[in-house]
Image (cartoon, rainbow, N blue to C red; front, side, top):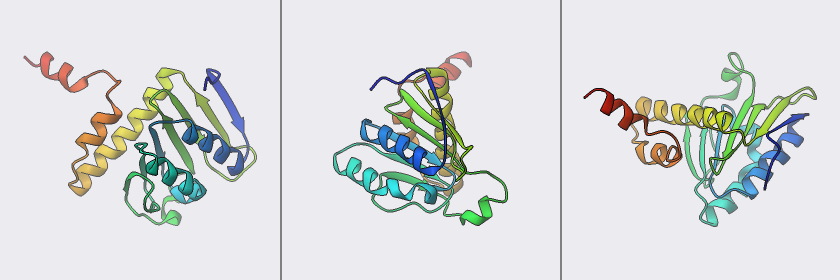
Length: 166
């Protein structure tokens, strides 16, 4: 499914949910980062179907995540605690080639960007990888397999760093 380079969306949660569902439906490897997943709980059934179909779904959230929606990393922080520091936002990467990035507030002036621009997709993916890596460090969880799977299309930074130190 080809997307325009940048598609600015304006609207509330229903419109964003529609865009997220579209990316989830046509994706072989959806990855989702949302500080507060409760805003997207209606995606649960679609994510479960994707998992049942053998699609590798990776989700990070600071709040609790629903079961059986893929490989997820969650701190389980109460949503009201996060609202003191951050606005609601979402990042979704589909097949490491498309990204939805933006706000997830329930307001009409909320905006999201859907893009295939690789610079933006790679930034979104890097954000997800950083969150998962930090989660692993904080909870002593091995995230190497997930991270290497998500970064297979990116530059081999570890190898480049190692070779520069020789």
